[in-house]
Image (cartoon, rainbow, N blue to C red):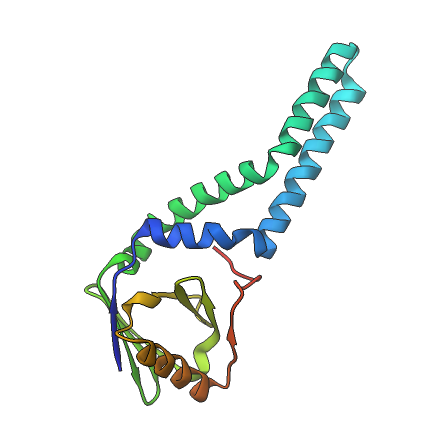
Amino acid sequence: MEINYIISKEELVNFHMKHVTETKNYKKATINNTIFTLLILFLVFIISKHSYYTITAFITCLVLLLFRKKIVLYLLRKKLYKILSFEKYTNYFEHTTLMIYEQGLKLTTNLSEKNYKWNSIKSLHLIDKFLLIKTNTHDNILIPIDSFKSLESKDFFINSIINNTNLKLQNKYPIDFNY
């Protein structure tokens, strides 16, 4: 079976940003942001001799805490775009052919060809309009569902992976996803 698709950088970033709040990295970044903001407030409170500085710092910290989700999401989006701009990831956005063969999956683009054995597939996620295949080599394969010719071909593809890897299809974004 062969699947042909193209995914854009914007689609990839938007997919991950839509679900990033479910990951450990996001929760860690939010906690770090909160601790940093409170430490600044505490330092200003101790160091300042005037109440105006303390009030200003308190209001600033309150605003930062209220908008921390937007701030963290903005910084993560910026980081993800920066990561995906490296030459290493240029083949992600080329015309891609994914084939199932006896030993695993074969991913072919204009720039590279990779083979993934069945035991190197870590997890399988069906989220929104995408199929996410996580591998042990940290190459994550994101396949748009509309790249399948029919619903039966999508089911056949997913069942082939499940039967050969003994994995379960998950409908949630992986919480341990790294960028």
